[in-house]
Image (cartoon, rainbow, N blue to C red):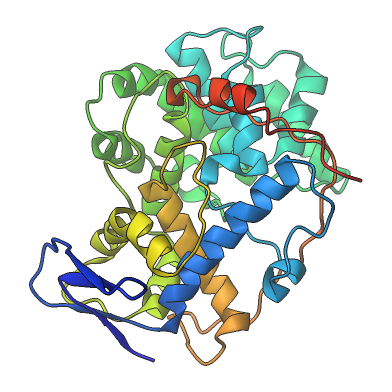
Length: 355
């Protein structure tokens, strides 16, 4: 099915057309996956709130969401992001200087695994740059691997870095990468950086860090007080998002990938209303560019089952990870500068999840 998106998007429920300004004159054409993008976003966010409110499992009747694992509609709501924000960045018992906060964020994100962070804390005590020693961290990480533990998350692949730093073990090269950033005074330079794109470029200049990682890292750094960029400033699509974009848009109509992602962010309220979807925002916070980018990655996976006839660039046809419900209570905490935490408390919407 090809559904043209022109300069005016008709509200099919009310028969009203409203002007939408595109950067290019040529219209885009979407496939049926485009509507699934919005339906997925609304239902995945509804699952998030049902679980947060303590509703009884299962939290959805969507047959794909019931079986397979998908990230949240909002990146900052995911388990690893929540841990990073609450237990790595905003720690009252840890130093708050830009250098120390940056060091904790990058050390956590290089591995992107809660269990690795907690292992290091148990073995080495409070994690600070002041007390950091390469030999101690190297020894503990090597010990974990010898015991058969994975120290890296499977969420994305970290390049080994041996060509840049010359060490045989991947984690050794990543520790040396972090040391170089610290010696280059990157935390201080980022604190003086006016735009998210410039921060991205500073990270992108380091060995082993490509576009995808640089965008993820600057987003994580921006959860802290070190920087204060708008998440609507800048976006870089990752490989999964590119597949999702291809599945949603049969013809981009002259728009490049970042422009298409921005278009989705701009159209969100109109499209949810057009489709009759009750999308619950994050206590008033709209989907940001990073969230819309992530949703393209997730709808790429969703479409493998829901729309198998529509192929992406990679040709992947299966979703690897199955959904395993976590029934433990969740305590949500977002960057204080977003001013959401007080809204959450006032709304009294967060209760222990049902068993």
